[in-house]
Length: 239
Image (tube, rainbow, N blue to C red):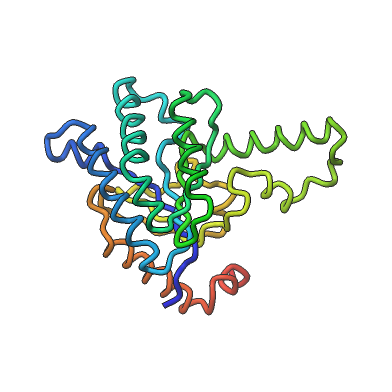
């Protein structure tokens, strides 16, 4: 089976999972963290080299303050509790998103996770935190415009390649497959540049119910599309 090197996941449905069980939203987020743990463990076993997860979008700040506080607490707990295991298992952590305005302790934890695991090679776990695809593109455009204004490059030097190299995901291959749980059929501002040619799989299950078998099924779906169209690159050309 052809396995995608890079899988990205929109982890959606924590709140609805909790509501369906008469539980507070925090319970859904906690169950979602456990689903993330299982997915990180399963990914390298299934042949995945890069796993990107949409942990906290730049739009999530509009949620109730209590929920945002809970989400921040869960991030801190995940890093403090799981970082040693991630490092021991050879997982490299990369964080994408805008870190300006984040609390110093959050920024410190993100930096610690990246620094400690920088040399690991079994899996690269990319955490999209305070991330939005449009925001990333705008920040990149500003960065390149400032470089032109300083005389460090010309406007003609802004190409698709140089633009991609200035994104948060520099050095990370574009996702071959994007999975979204909860039955929603949209990208919700996730990896808009990088997912231009990604295969998309939408699953009806809520994120806390996501299992190794769900991931394996999505990989089989991906492989079936590749076989059916004679390779994804050929498919793009044919369309």
